[in-house]
Amino acid sequence: MPQGYAHPFTRTDRSPLAIWWWTVDRVTLASVLLLIFAGLVFSFSSSPVAAPKIGSANDFYYTQRHLIFAVASATLMISVSMLSLKGVRRVSTLIYGGALTIMALLPFIGHKAKGGRRWLDLEFFSLQPSEFIKPALIVLIAWMFAESQKGRGVPGVTIAVILYVLCVGLLLIQPDAGQTILITLVFGACFFISGVPMRWIIGMSGAAVVGMVSLYFALPHFRSRIQEFVSPEGDRYQVERAAAAIANGGIFGTGTNEGTMKRLIPDMHTDFIYSVAAEEYGLWVSLLLIALFSFVVLRGLWKAMNMPDPFRQIATSGLYIIVGLQVFINVAVNLSVIPPKGMTLPFISYGGSSLMAMGLTMGLILALTRKRPAEVQPDDPTKW
Image 1 (tube, rainbow, N blue to C red):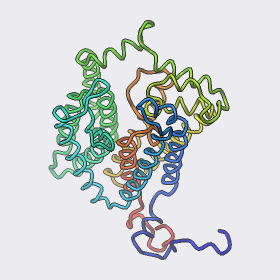
Image 2 (image 1 turned 180 degrees about the vertical axis):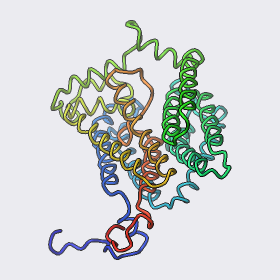
Image 3 (image 1 turned 90 degrees about the vertical axis):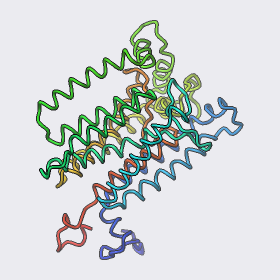
C-alpha cells in the first residue's frame, strides 16, 4: 500500500458499510464494474450511427442514456448486495409478484414491437418485466428446492413448478420464445443441482423437448426465424452483416467510429453490439470480453458449488448460469451460429431494462456470496 494512503475501512470497523466491504466478493464486483465501463466505451461506437435512425440530432443520444442506466445499474447492484439472506428472499418475492402482475397486463396495456407485446412504455424508457422476473424466479425456486430438502412437509418442488409455469405461461402469451427457452434451461439446471431423482430429470428433459417442438408449430414468429436461418434463401441479413463486421475488424480493429459494416446492422447498439466492438476494436478485444465473462461465470459457479447451504448454492448457481447462457446466446447469434433471439449482451448492450435487471442479478449474487458470521473464524477478524 502506498505510503500515506489511508484505507476507508479498517478491518476492525464493524459499521454496516465496512462489514459489507470486507465480506463482499470484491473480485466479482470489480469485474462487473469493468464490464459496465466496457459497455459505455462500446456505446461511443454504436450511438453515432444508431441515433440518426430515430431522428435524433445528438449523435451520442444512446451513449448519454446508456450512462444513466449504467450508473443506475451499478447503484442497484451495490444496494442489493447489502441485503441479508432474508432480504434477498423478500425482495425476490416482491419483484416476482410485481413483474408477474405487469406481464399479465401487457396484452392490454403493453407496447407491441418485434412481433410481441413485451414492453410497458414509461415515456423515459420501455420496461420489459420479463428481464426482472428471471433473477427473482431463480431465487424463489432455489428457496423452494432447499425447503423441500429439509423434509418438513413443505411442497417445495410443487411450488417451484407452479412459479415456473406461471412465468412461462405469461411469456408465451406475449409471445417470447427466447426468454421461455432461457428460463426453462435455468430451471432445469436448478432442478438438477437440487439433487432430485434422475427419473424426474429425464421426465423434465422429455417435456422440454416436446415443448420446443410445440413452440415451433404454435408460434409463427419463432418458426419463421428458424426457417429463415436454416434456409439458404432465408432472410439472414442481420446475422450476415454482423459476421461481416467481425471479419472486417480483423485482429486489431478499424478504430473507434471507423467501422463501416456496423452501418448496415439495424440493432447494432442492442443485440449486435458485440459485432460493433469486434469491428472497431478487433478480435483481441472481443476475445478479452469473452474471457472476462467466462472468468466471472466459471469462478462464480465454482464458488457456488462450495457453499454450505442448499439455498445459496442453488440460487447462486442459477443466477450465474442465466448470465452465462445469455452471453453465450448473444455471441452465438453474432457469430451466425444460431438464429437471432433478441437477447442482449449483459452490461454491454444498450437497454434500460437489460442493464437494470443485470444489476439486480449481480446484486443478488453478491448478497448470496457474502461471507456470513458462521463462516468466519472467531479468531480471524480479517476474514470479515
